[in-house]
Amino acid sequence: MTTAIETEFEESMMSSQQPNAPTAASPGLFGRLGRDLGYCLASFFVGIPAFVAVVALLTLGISTAIIYLGIFVLIGCVFTASFFATAERRLASWDRGELPPHIYRQPQGSGLRRLLSPLTDSLRWREVIHAVLSFPIRVTVFCLAVNWTVIGPAMLLAFIWRPYLGEVPEDVQSIQLGGVDVLHFWASERYWLDVVIGIFFLLTLPLVLKSLALLQRVLARGLLTNQSEVWKVRAEQMEASRNSAVAAEAGNLRRIERDIHDGPQQRLVRVSMDLKSAQRRMERGDAGAAELVAEALQQTQDTLNELRAISRGIAPPILVDRGLLAAIEAAAARTPVPVSVQSEGMNAERLPENVENTAYFLVSEALTNVAKHAKARRATVELKRQETVLWVSVSDDGDGGAHLGRGHGLAGLAERVEAIGAVLTVDSGASGTTISTSLPLS
Image (cartoon, rainbow, N blue to C red; front, side):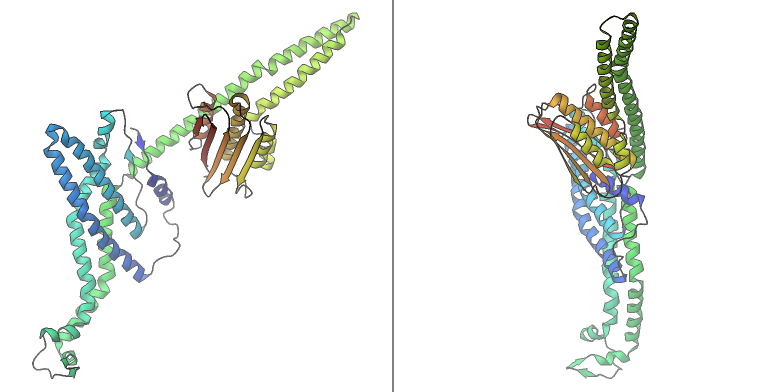
């Protein structure tokens, strides 16, 4: 099963990996009360339109499914439920931290099959169930939260509003205050009972609100998340990254082996033959030995140049000793096309070794393609280090036409980048080509 990970996936994955990370400011008692009460009230106002819309669309879709119109209504129903489910996830996350991550199934196929694929996603139907099932719970939670919040202060202030309702014992002597019988109610047993009730409701208010909010959060966690599917997809991604790494290294070794066999090895054979021929001529005293030695020296120099070019695919000493920025500046200086290197945040500590090697390989191969195929007048390399990723971009003003098709040089770059969990993006048109990626630093 192929799945698509939404924007919330990465954020929730990060939060789930650090469950005990401290927040910037932990809310106090009143802050927690306010959050719990706000969640209980806001969830009610989200639940009303969710229940009405989902039930109406679900009923209409089922009743008209026989004429096929209902199928499209049901598609609208599941997407409507997803919209309100997103709002509920945000409310639940605002109350007590992020919910576990969730994913939707990626549409497969084409045409009608692709259009109907949302109806086969179990998470979307669970969102429909949540919109319907949670409504009576939201109503109950709303009523309890409002009443529990109001009753405590109301009972403590009963000595003010009860006299206006005529609920004052006749055997208690009246004490006038501003023409209203107020203070004499303090002497009655009813007043102290109200005080006890008010204190009880105020003391239990935090626990009640926390329990009501927790009830809604547990329901949202159970129906609006599918963490097991997330980890399944994550395992598949890690397996794909491992396979990409193996394929990239194997392809790199084959390339180096082919380049050595076709270039330096043949030249070294030619040098050996020329030197042996020169040796025989020198022994016989024939002329032309010096020319053969000079040609052998030229072949030796060409062999060294080819070996240097081949070694660019391997981590050069400057990368190991001075870091990524210095290595890329050196690679840019060797490129026949003028290259400008722009960096941001690269003066901090060294990057992980696999990130540096991948970034250098990407830039060096991209610059080689620019020099050989792009017919460009200039190129630009951009490096931007952020908190969790390294953004790498190589752009030129050449003829374009680059793509990630199998058998092309960029396919190997894509495999190399995928090996560390990133994705290579190629934007190539008549105005030039841009190759970019965001390499994770962890």
